[in-house]
Length: 481
Ligand code: BES
Ligand code: ZN
Ligand code: ZN
Image 1 (cartoon, rainbow, N blue to C red):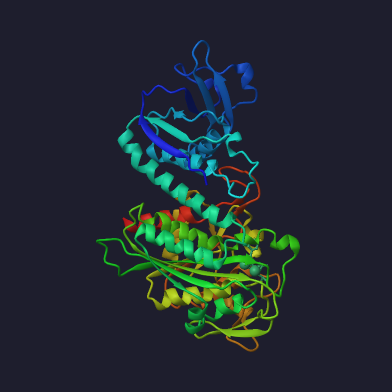
Image 2 (cartoon, helix red, strand yellow):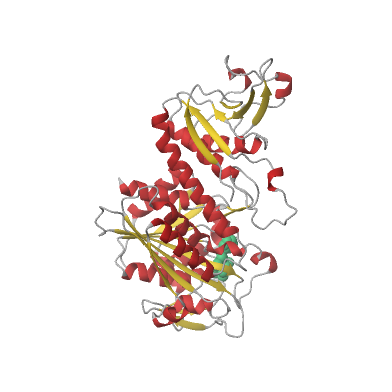
């Protein structure tokens, strides 16, 4: 990941390049700015995300005009930030945003969009690939009035956006190298760098600790599973009420013996997006000065078919003693989460939030841009919805009615791992998870849709979006107050 450095400076610094944010089209461009040539302006109307490069007469100033559209909200500024960094030429290393008098939160949103939009995953390009031939800013200067008020929000936005890009890197890396073992090693080094304690269960401990769901899923793979627990205990905060974050970490989901189609498994290296969001949140938790105790549980394994794989009809016993009949080995996320949620519950978490690329049904219900939220506690659910709204990550609550528990009744075990065919697949998955949190207040985020973007859209690149990091950070920040 090439990091974009964002610097806040006071207004008045002379800059070669200026980004101007335009709301109502060309007529709104004011006196002191270099005027764009209207003929050049073409279709520029100031619509959200539109850009126009304009040269000024006589002086050597160049301006990039970025449309904001009609709603001057945080999302408009995020989109403008992304559009600006993508439109700027490679040899421009400094951009000034003319942002006098604008709300610090909106300037922070611009910086966030710039960092997110700047992201590319180039780690695996060949030697012939010249990254410097692509437009990519190294520095962005935000020229603002009231620098002292801007610094905090902009700094925070850049930290969170960089953490989101870190999650994207983890997710975009192929499954061949982003194995459970490697993910756990990265979790350990992130922990060391941030004064966080980290415990990793290897295969032998997963067996001796009776993490039956994680074992059942990992049985078909030559890669060993891992369970990672990270614990953040900020100084001066009595660590009684712990927020537990739980992530699904299937580093590759082939479906197991209930094998996916070729097309269906093409993007399944991203099936650890929930765990990546949790780890990335921990990478920035100290930097944000979060003042609540937080534990993270990441259940990591591949889901592969082989002679030793779990077979449809097999039954395992999860960490909390409940038995689960596996009728479809492709419904594996809920099995590894069963153990991770059991651990969080057992450790006495005050509340639990899990994130998982859990069901294709959620993509059908809510599409690629909205995550589903379910749970057993309105205050955690509402807190998550509110955090997502402020962070710019759309979430929508789905019901979790006990009446559908019949969908997961098994002939032979306490429950089965699939619901009724073609009916409420996202809900039946969440109802299974609910069996493992006890009475602990809990919210479950099904991020199967928004964890991946299918194009270079908005401030995303085709590939991992890092969905969830911004929501989790907002949620924890709200708790810290
Ligand atoms: N990882 C998938 C869900 C998924 C699908 C994530 C598409 C992202 C995009 C999950 O493990 C899965 O395969 N679920 C099955 C469950 C079914 C067998 C009950 C599904 O959704 O088809
Ligand atoms: Zn699956
Ligand atoms: Zn999966």
